[in-house]
Length: 338
Image (cartoon, rainbow, N blue to C red):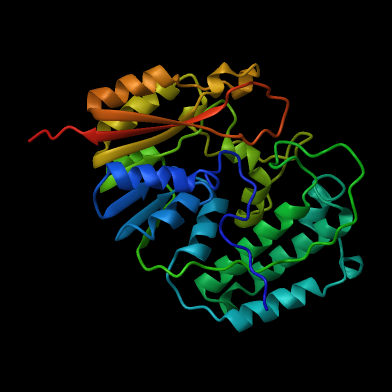
């Protein structure tokens, strides 16, 4: 039996994989409608759950690496599973020792990955680019996403790419495991600033799970962005990052004003906001940019708001240490202005 990777089989800061059942049990009890929008879709696990319960779903994210994943899992399009399997099987049989150095191995070999795995990743990415015309858009997205999901399992990191671990890298060989697309026909995908998109769309339920602190996702996942874009830009610093792009206002001192602007411009019946109490963290970079009381006040001005809490073991990749971590869910029934 062929093994597949599912949409939730990914390490990602703030992932709601373990909370999705709780979140949707509350949405089903407190919201009505047919159109669901996830403005900060991340891994896409919330969108996948929403696709089972809503007639139409929209996923939005600013990262290219997340968009290619949505194209692979959600977007309609023709693809040949056997063809994809043959290509992935060919990649898995390559001996990295026979490969030449390439852009990826020169930058990331011996750091984020072993020299051999880095050469293989670079070769595969270049081969995909060279043969893209032989693949449908869906096939291309599936293979590239399969590569992203698989390399994440062997990366020499603590779960993101802010830095690599300064120790000897193990000799585990990259093996690409094919991802399993979702069988849905109701998804629309955007790569836009959330506040810009909010002005363009209408929904019954809008789900908001913004960045919580000063850690920029585009910097945490720069390596995956580099692989997907494959524009071979010059990289800087110990962490080998490109020049900054796609920086979020939600990670700055302007977060509360940006959030208020988002809430003011939503055209929806219900607003659902995920947040947590990390602003009590001892780590300054982990402290929330918007306090829970600020969110509560903004949402209560927009409509009738209910608050739900759940203890949750957070993804801690660094030295952040705090007790009584909770996930909060705000559900607002927007006031009817008519």
